[in-house]
Picture 1 (tube, rainbow, N blue to C red):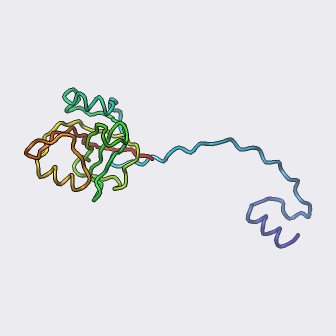
Picture 2: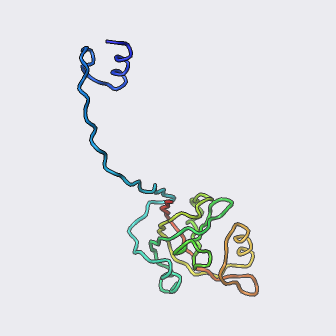
Picture 3: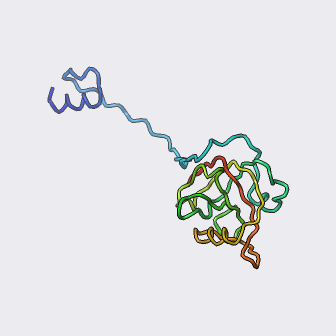
Length: 169
């Protein structure tokens, strides 16, 4: 047996390669087509069993959801460009679509700064708050947008305070 054949047998782990007979060629079975699912990454705590709500429903009736824990799925329209300490979640990537800011409980975790364009599912507490003008200016400097601002520079927003985020592209 040639050294080359011995090397091939050793690499492939073929048993019985010490014979001088060639093994009969095996017909390769056709492979089934497989679809590759996008990789999901989790930030913060794993998602739990909260009731689900659509982003649009939360935005239309924030008072109905305020103080409740929900699981919301949507498009990541923007994320903090400095640290990834917030992201905007909406029903689609269109910048004019209604969306809400997602922050992370106790500043305990961040998402990648290039998260825009991803899909995400979040477990979060729903809050409706007035944001002070200084914070509005700070968030805008990081890429945030506000649909409605008051004359004094403050803005009212619906916010999701997430304990866990699952994200994929």
